[in-house]
Image 1: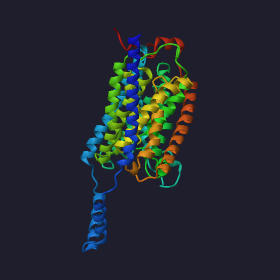
Image 2: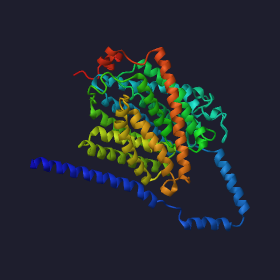
Image 3: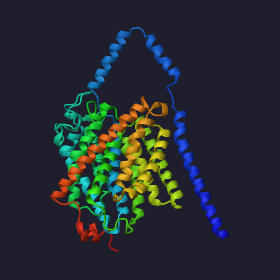
Image 4: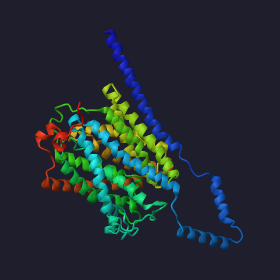
Length: 488
C-alpha cells in the first residue's frame, strides 16, 4: 500500500510539473510578444528627415542621374546568383518533403499490408502532377493575363492559358531575380505535395486508379485556382483582400485538409475501425519521414521569400521555433493525459507546428512563432484525438486533424502576430487583419469542400472510390500492386 501511494504521489508530481511547464510555455509565448515589439531607432528617422529637409546642391541633376540609373538597371536586370542558388536548394528541399519524406512518414503509420501502397501514391503523384503542371497547371495558377488590381474579374480566380505548355519560357526568362524555370519548378513542388497530403485521409482503402484520377482533376480544378487567388499578384482575389499567406496556409494545408475530410467521409471507414486495433507498422519509418519533413520545410517556408535575404532568414528561424514548440507542447499534453509521452505524438506535434507557421513564416517574429507553435500543438492534439473520436470520421493518418486544423490556427494567428506591435513585420490593424484571414479561411473551406465533393462523386461514378472488402482485408500492396512491402 505504501509503495502504491508513493507511486501515485510521484505520478502526480510529474503531472503537476508538466502542467507547470505548459503554463510557463504559454506565458512565454504571449507576454514577450507585447514587450519585445521594436520600433525604428529615432536617430535613423531623424537622419532621414534631415536629409529630406536639407537637400544637397545640384539636387535636380542628382535626382535625374538617379532616375536614369534606376531605368538603366531595370532595362539591364539580370539574375542574382545568390538568390538563384538558394532557390535551387529550396526546390530540392521541398521535393524531398514528398519523396521520400511524406512517403516514409505516412508509410510507417499504415499497417504492414499497405506500406507500399502509400509509397506508390506519393511517387506516382510526383510524376502525374509534374506533367499536369507543365502542360496546364502553371498557367492556371500563375499566369497574370487579364488581372487588374482592385477589380474582381474572372482572372481574379484563375489564370489564363497564355503559359500553357510553358509557352514563352526559355533559358533567359526571369521571374524576379531568378530564372523562371527555377520558379516554375519550385511552385511545382508545392503542387505535388498538396494532393499527396490528402492521401493520408483515405489510406488503406481507396483504389489506386480512383486516387490518381481524383488527384489529377483536383490539382487543376481546386489547387491551381486557389494558388492563383493567393500568389499571382495584384488583381488576384486574396491578394487584393490583403490576405497574409506567405507559404501556403490556405493554398496547401487548409485546402488539402478540407479535401481530406470530405474524401474520408465519402470513401467511408476502414473495416474494423474503432473496433480493431490498427497500430502503425513502423514508427521508425515515421520518425525518419517526420525528420525529413522538418528539414525540407526550411525550403518550403524560407524558399517562399524567392530570394536569399532577411525575410528568408527570419522564415527559417520562426519555422524552427514553431516546430520545436508544437512538438514539445504535444508531448507534454500527452504525458499529462496518458501518463507517458509517445514518439508518434511528438512527431505529429512537430508537423502541426510546421503547418501552422507556414502562412506566418514571412511576417511574424520569434515570439509570435513561439505562440503559434504552442497553440498549434494544443489544438492539433485536440483535433486529431478528441474531435475525430467524437465525430467518428476515419481520417486514417490525421490529414485533416493536423493540416486542416493546423492550417486554420496558423492562418488566424498570422493576423495577430504579423503586427509590428507584436514583433511582426506588417503595419496592420489586428482586428481587421484577423477578419481578412478568417474570410480567406471560409472561402478556402467552401472552395475546396464543394469542388472536392463534386470531383469525388464523379470519380466514384466512373471507376468507384473504394476497393472490394476482400481486397481491403488482403491489403492494398497485394490487391492493387501485386507486391509486398517486406519479404522476410
